[in-house]
Picture (tube, rainbow, N blue to C red):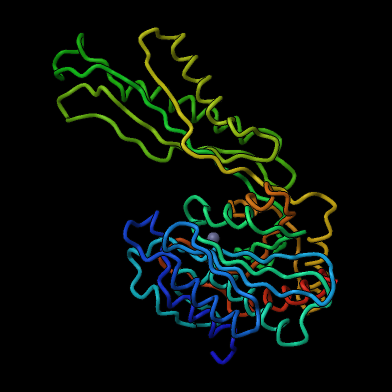
Length: 379
Ligand SMILES: [Zn+2]
């Protein structure tokens, strides 16, 4: 593990940065943000650390070019998901060209690559023109508070989110919407069917409509890069005890969205289902509300960034291709703020799982391509 970039990656993985909104009491991003800041300062970048919420800072490093010109941003999230069930999540281990540990793939591999790319630029003459911004943001695994705070303060002409893509140039991804549905019944002794009304049976009617809807969504013509929309019933809760008619049932579901759908799509669909069920049975009682929405994203077609990354990959002797991604990223937030963005990072497997790893050679390839990209974009 002699390479300095992989040493940096190991240092980042060794720092616990589990998102405290996902896991109450978890350490959060502060320590890893300060480690990133120290590394960028040592490389000669101008560095700012800013609390987004108390004790959870974004960190931004800047390289100013020698003349005015375009600004490029690299952005990665510093938080990870929890570590329950992992034996040594913060002890990175390299085996067969893979580095194992929590956050190796999602996404400290990409973060190490972007820091190292900036470092190599800073230490080999800097940028001819424009500006390179290197941002580590908090909270992507929950509500993306970090990316929201970043775009309220920093602007750029293009951005790369270094989430793991197997070195594919990711030019878009789906969005998601969370909806909570409640059905009401009447509690009664299990022996008194005339008095009881079963809220769980009523949710069953909702669920069969949702299943039909999910099949309908997936049989529509797919979006050219994002595929089809989908939904699933994520969490269900209801009932009081075995011998009682349940008076309440709640279902929380997720709807994955594609470009062209509205930010109310999921709620509108569910309300149509509830309306149909009320028409079929005047006693049916059900309500729905939207819990959370993140939009889909597509890099503006014709923007130079995807081609510029492909050219950079070619120059550093590597192959790549262009594709839509399934998973959501902060690219949607940067995109909404008017920054054309692509997702481009190393490969691996097991993200959010027990055996997460990143491919070491991909981290180096990502670093080299990002450095080349910045030198060719910021002119
Ligand atoms: Zn991620």
